[in-house]
Amino acid sequence: MVANFTHAPAAANPSCGRAAGELLRELIDGQEVDCRSLGRDRYKRMIAKCSVGWLDLGAEMVTRDMVPTPDPCLRRISGP
Image (tube, rainbow, N blue to C red):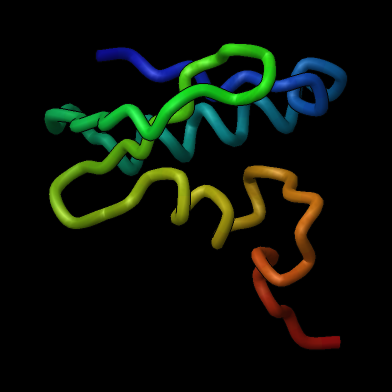
């Protein structure tokens, strides 16, 4: 299964999208990706949790500030 991580902010800033894509390729590194459907959002797009082995790809992308999130509790805590 191929997951599409594209969203409007990345499309508006192509350099961010490229950096996120490079990180995703690095994390996957030719390994098998397992995606499990969690349902659909209000626009009927599939929501899935994808992992490589024990690594949750979505969580890792958020941890590395590659995915914008409206919830400040989900953002990485960084020093001043």
